[in-house]
Length: 111
Length: 114
Image 1 (cartoon, chains in turn purple, yellow):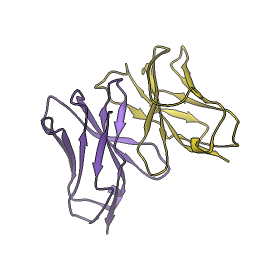
Image 2 (cartoon, rainbow over the protein chains, first blue to last red):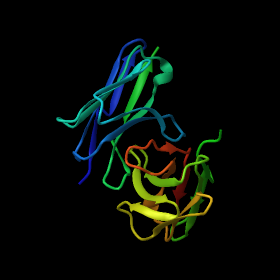
Image 3 (spheres, helix red, strand yellow):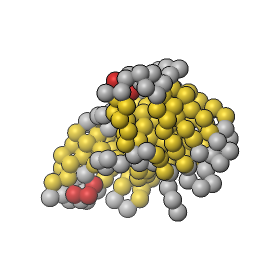
Image 4 (cartoon, rainbow over the protein chains, first blue to last red):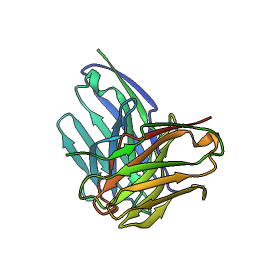
């Protein structure tokens, strides 16, 4: 079935360091890959997305890379700040246009 | 500009009862999707509606149903509640519900079944 695997499940970094979260997906037909940040008690907030016609996209301190051949995509956060602490979810589009989410990565940025 | 809104924010029910959750999409968006998020997991797809028609359905029992109104708002209904239905129910909206469209999530309704 359609599946997205996400690693690591928890990630702790020092303020100013970089953080990398990796995901793999099963459906080769997927062509849209968003990343969401979810803070405690809130709904997921889109932080960046990538479509399959590009391999990399950057928005200030956040970047996403996509390798369609390997069915991998990754989130890179540079110069992390305490306010980056949250749960991050990757997702891929399924056959019904729905989002299939990974299980999430809890990022902790220590001051 | 208001984002996706959901009501109520919290709800407590007992087993066997039914519940109705409501969602208003971003103005101009015609598609609404519902997701269930169990604690510690990623959201799981329940339904997608576009122009009042069901466009997609996830792997949930028939106790779950939904509808979309002419103003594009939506309701999710769950009958015969089970303890395992306790979760955060999220609504997401997009313009057309297309496969490469961004989906914007509301704050969710937290349901506790006792």
